[in-house]
Image 1: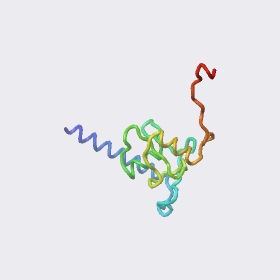
Image 2: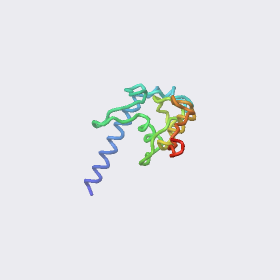
Image 3: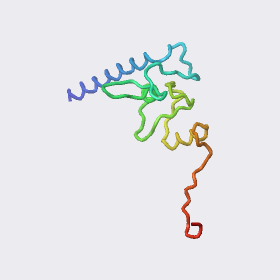
Image 4: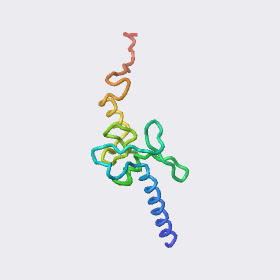
Length: 128
């Protein structure tokens, strides 16, 4: 039982350390408005913020959601309502599926083939 208590304390300490490191890459508190993007100032890949913790690369937007809103259920992703990949404002982050994200991409005209549809019908013997 003592082992579990120490394990939980250790995990809580690690989480606090990670959150402090995370917050170093946010804009100053006076510039963090709920309706404005909080652009990540740390390392990015393809515009998305990231931070390394315990030999793992973690997405900054996922951390922001977890720190400010709660746990991310398995199978769900984080979507940006602001279409700004470097934004980590929790008010701009929502849960969704990959399908939701693809729908948003087409709806907001963020893909090169937005509005076009592939013809995936099979040819019958008569039309071939």
